[in-house]
Amino acid sequence: MGAAAAIVRNMNALVGPGVMLLYPLYASMRAIESPSTLDDQQWLTYWVLYSFITLFELSFWQVLQWFPFWTFIKLVFCLWLVLPIFNGAAYIYEKYVRKYVKVGGLVNTNYPETQRKALQMMSLDARKSVERFIDTYGPDAFDRVVKAVRNDSNNINNSTIKGVRFGV
Picture: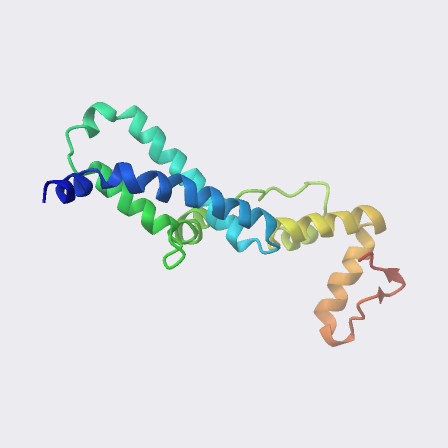
């Protein structure tokens, strides 16, 4: 009974590093190598949240030492963030971070108003591609593309639009 009680008391010290560091490191390396960006989002968000937890602990350690369940609460929260069943870090990113933090929301003011509006609705990757297209073929070519899409999306040919060749 004494050994089991010691294991339960020290579960955070035994399980914590594996849950909070070893598995996330392994999963992050797998995410780097995978072609999908969804797992990148999960693990980048996890590391940001883990950093905030660590900074919180370092800043308020004198207060937290008075809460006997703090290490257990942190372990359970990190389990929720890490386990693929829950994907808690991705959930937090989708529900809170993406909604309130607009990274890369600025669009070059040199573009006309209609083009700026179109670019602001795009993801950062799509915006970079369109900006490269505009730099290569000019803003008039982008206007022709937008007008063609508005008029009849079925007539768009993937290789040319009114004499403008897309670089794929």
